[in-house]
Length: 120
Image (cartoon, rainbow, N blue to C red; front, side, top):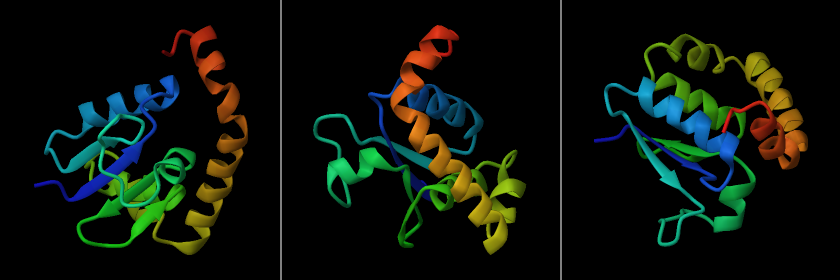
């Protein structure tokens, strides 16, 4: 049974590529990946809200978003677990959240950027 559920935007080529990498790293099947853009996907909040920010939930914990959600994902993957544990520090999480917010500003252009660099 998955310990972490993540909701991602499967219509975003960059997001899909990143999730594909996370799936390969999840050798223990500890993560349930849910494409929030797919018809019929179960969403704990409105679909649009899920598509606007990366969301995750550890076990039966609260719904997390942004850097906190990435940290939950990282904690479920042994290779990335140290980074996820470091993000439990409020200062580290604050820095990661600022980086994530910067990415969100660039995200509308990211599919074109990814395609131009052959990431998708």
